[in-house]
Length: 194
Image 1: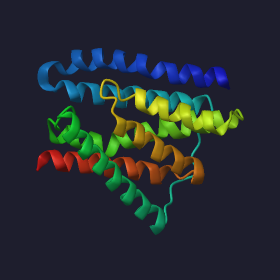
Image 2: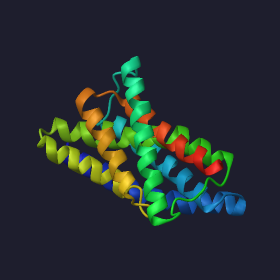
Image 3: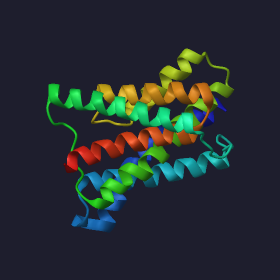
Image 4: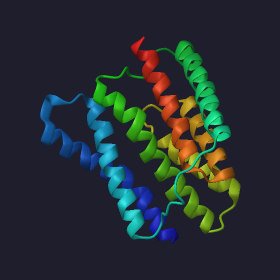
């Protein structure tokens, strides 16, 4: 199982690059560079998720969330946005503004689903099945989440990874961490449109 997990986690960045080339070839100049990157990431991630199902590295205990979990998701997203805002003021404008409605929809809906499924359902759950030390599991999951945001590796990405990983590790509710991520991305896009 460890070998399968290593293959899947190493394959994602390679597939993203391949899909960037493919989407650039197919769509030409009709998409902005951010859209190429996100579309490529979504395509590569969908392939990784499908591959993970085939290898039996992933399964869902399907999605439910109570009011308390929903409110925690909103609160954590608000706190993370506040940290993002402080980081942006202190270090300047390094987060690109949304280039289109398509980009915004991908950032709010698709990216949180894809990133959280890969980071929590594939990486964290499978490391946990291997009986790896829980601090190493949490650390590797946060590291993987942060590195996947290259070149925009920010302190707030680390904190999003930390918050969602700790919450998921505690209650194993994938919908809650997807909502945290979606609310956080929505707040950044809403802020950039103001």
